[in-house]
Image (cartoon, rainbow, N blue to C red; front, side):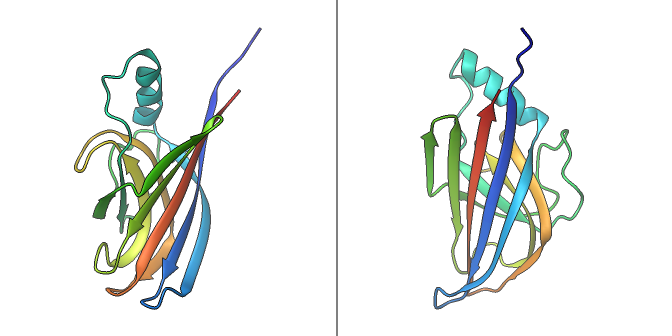
Length: 146
């Protein structure tokens, strides 16, 4: 018997104007980084690692790699709006309200702390211009499968 677990992520990034109208949407696959895989294994054995609790966005453009432990150029980090488990998937939602994380947003990550902490996953995408009165919502699903 040869079984292996696969962990993959997918996120949907939505940018809204000040009136709540959708300006842009991106659907992106992401990389679950090595520290994220270690985190999953550690949580299976014990609960000493804090759960994923924050999402960050940034302006970095260097491709995601398994060795990443932080964003390239973090612009803002917020507490997760929600985290819900359905079967073998967990969905994280983070909302960056007006005035939070403005600029040319091109990367995102999920973390277990309000600063530093363990990064679960990271992605880089073509930039979205988040103006001061825009809001940005990221819905990030991480699925574990055989």
